[in-house]
Length: 329
Image (cartoon, rainbow, N blue to C red):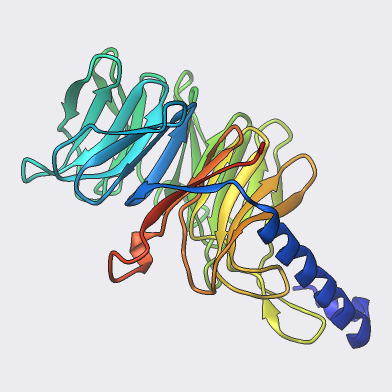
């Protein structure tokens, strides 16, 4: 672990910290287009549509018309959206299953095999991935074909690639991020460093949260170059000898050149809140500032960032609003 305190004096460090603080305050106050669009959890966004759950029903919000439509009656959680299709975990029948909803026709179908109470679906095109009982499944909903593709959890999908966490597939490591190619049916280990989890994929980039320390940090793997870089800071020590870093790994998402994440601690790395990271410039920007120990669930598509409060970290329904920010405004 590098000691960044060796790089400057305590006096210079203090000036720098004040400068960073002022920048972050300015960034937070400059965001004027943050809008509450509903109440609930687990928002996801695609195109001009946002989907979320209030813990019971699914809401579909049209950004163009600013209309909120209820598309499910009960037992709904963990929604995702791609184009005109929604998926979510449905327990309205008393047992877990996955619902697939076609928006234009308002028709619903169910995936009932190999689903448990922790299954969280992700969709890309006509393919849905999820995990159940430490196994990862892929279903082509256009062909009604379902396959077990790995041993693990927390899968995500982009085009013909699926990434997931596993602790049993790689004989050379205990905890890894694996990537499965749907066309070739081959797998590789993306990383076996630290305690990697929550993998997400878009294009030729794979990101994950390494939660070895505290709330973790974010790392990124480039499939083309086969190189891994840190997006946010690992646990480290600031010039004054205080711990910082490892506070950005609770919820992450990626789309094109942007990564969004939650930061829950006020430290040398920055203020707590919702952030967007630009892959091209390597810069993080504070989108919306929160107090310490507030955990949010940011998701992104194009310039639209949506988020709510992470229900895994709260004991009540207080302040569980869904917010939206248009980065282009």
